[in-house]
Length: 232
Image (tube, rainbow, N blue to C red; front, side, top):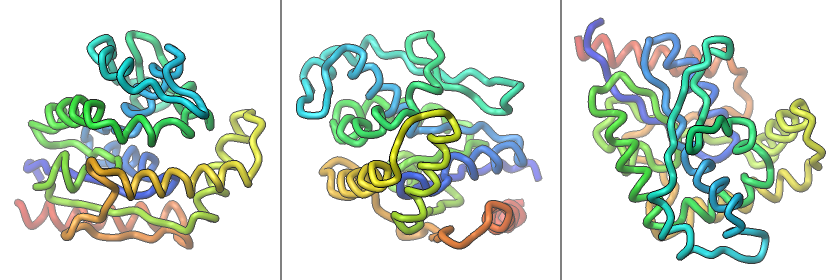
């Protein structure tokens, strides 16, 4: 199968979008792009500059300094996926913290931030053969993607997954704090004016609340093969 396609994976936070996207890209030999990591990197940049906090956000300062933000992905052979670099520094671990999670949806709602990152994301998919996950990939970034997926799961299920992940990394967090973060991000992602999280009309919805990782991977891989066979 020589014809490559574009695969857009959207959905709510902590639905395993990145995990399944990485696995799919690895199986297909495609490029994987974590668009959420890009927004997290900008949120980290704003946090480092002390422009955002629990009760404040200096939006103008961030917008005026976006030209100083460089985001790249560097493949780590030991891990088997690309890590996120902000201005030349590996921030893969930093951007996954609960603190940055609390800021990322606010940063992602800024039109200037979205314009910059969407432009970069579109460039990454010009030659196809890419799997990208995020909130507006199938609706804004790649509206013509051959395969669009929309991932969902109950807030409780997603909070439990996120809680287990952060505790495994040694972070002192509570389940209640994680659940509140999940609900808060859902609200911001679905109600923002610029590119809100919505399911593309032609997207396949996958509720993985009760699905094992293996069952989910098989379902999505089979869908991909069907489209590839049709294109060839």
